[in-house]
Length: 68
Image (cartoon, rainbow, N blue to C red):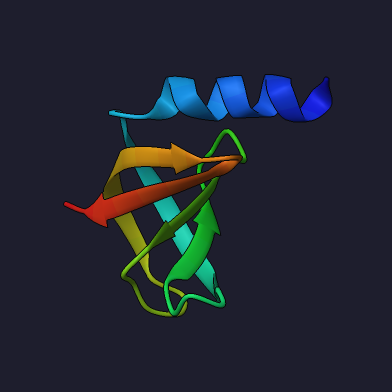
């Protein structure tokens, strides 16, 4: 049930703009960070980059974004 609730929460963030600090490189080459609500985000970014992103889609509990 926890994963279902988290997926629903993450899905509700799609389309919003958030500020994310990217800290870790994911296996797919994208960088990963967290929104202020602790939702995990992947995007084309660099290590330590703090930037505003638009959350475009969710896959499970991970959001994919593009930088603004």
